[in-house]
Amino acid sequence: MNPELYDAHDRLEDRHWWFEGRRRVIREVLQRHLLPRAKRRLLDVGCGTGGMFPLLSEFGEVDGAEASPDALERARRKFPGRRIESCNLPHALPEGVWDVVTAFDVIEHLDEPIESLRAMRSRLPFDGQVVVTVPAFQFLWSHHDDVNQHRRRYSRLELVSQLSSAGLRVSFVSYYNTLLFPAVAGARLLERLMPSRFATSADSDLDETPGPLNRVLTTLFGGERLAVGRASLPFGVSLIAVAQRHG
Image (cartoon, rainbow, N blue to C red; front, side, top):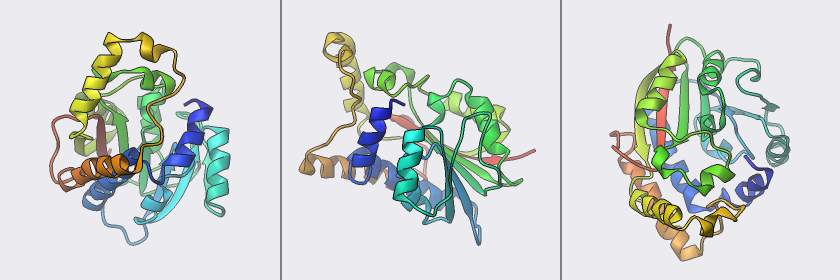
């Protein structure tokens, strides 16, 4: 991801509707699908500037791993005393064993996603779990994906296939950010019809959203927690999956 985007994440992830809505959905999925543990340990791979640490800390002791030196420095500054190490997937992850390894919007950036998932699996006990989120549907590809240096967007089948190939048994998978899917799809179509309007911009879609609109979008997106986790939604802008080590 472009270094400038980490500054935007650092400024916005506490309040922006996309981050807050995603956190609400992920919290619900974790509550429903993580195996019970007395003292759960979690490793957040690709932790960025640490925006998911407060949420994950509700579920156990959290460590982080991050490839970007800039993001790593920001995370360590924001969360002094927490173990946050450099990583380079698929060849280098922190040493240790964790009950849960998370990778939120990470593997779409990687040239070797299956090998990277195998590396995450290697840090799990025999019944450990991996939780991943990814952007969905290749036809939604946009300038935002280019700026964020994505390699791909996923279908449900592709995500399940990669997790399975890495030796992980998928226990739950669902699309999410479903209510806003028509608006996003419309915006992507507009970008294709008017490419010159977007091609010269170096910015992603991530930007400050006016307060009232931010609250409405947070409510719409976050409200999906009432469905995601209980059921698997048939479409959406993103995907979330929970998988367990086996074999």
